[in-house]
Image (cartoon, rainbow, N blue to C red):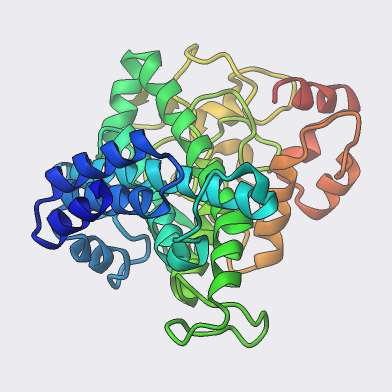
Length: 372
């Protein structure tokens, strides 16, 4: 009866009352799958207003959806999606365990995962992007450049991080979370949802996989680009984030300082001093050997040339980001962190990437792993 009353309230747009009835039903009988799903829907409508506006933002003609929302919209939609996913994830857990072992009886299975798998996948995708924006005070935005590289709006955060290390730690942690969330989305959520929808007429079927496409080619491609390279943009952590052997090598100036096709990736957190003749970059601030030549803060890594490239990178060949294999290689190297089972030896890195890897000795190479 409580579930029935909750459904009536939902149909009448009384979402707070609906949520209360569904909660009471769950307290009396936690196996009621319709109550769990009803609570998820009621929470979404209660906090988002019209969820179709959120769907519109997700499928808007932008590279990375939800990145252009203002702070108030980010907060509103994040609260809505998060509050909707909490009961939905619990319903999925109960449904999955009961399907595997009916004796558990954690769900009555009146509603099963196949009934809402597409909605779940879309909500998880929205949650992934919104959590990143919300965690970073809603002002960090990501876009995709024409060469498929990322562009971060970091100036405000950078200025704060210079004064407060906690801001730096929060941003780097949120980058890790975004990457982890996207990996989970592509490895688990989307495949499961697509499998359950393969016999549905509501979604386009990918001929190569035979699975339903929930996000669409362009949106999924852009999201995969973010998943592969977002960790390149961690800030001031003293680690080679982008797999080129250099450590915190670039500065926040909107230019490709190391000639690898990326802009403002693997940033050092330093103030800039500019004179009439040269730009002196953060002398004595981070005490790092950015180009890994054995010397900390030598001329090569402190002086910018007129083309905004660092002196140490003046002879680096410009890399083309359209070469997908190079992007994939650097992504793989950034993940190759187990010194007991090295996937890409130093000689391989020097031959296939070059750049700062050419300054490494085997002893310095060991330090690369110790710093991960």
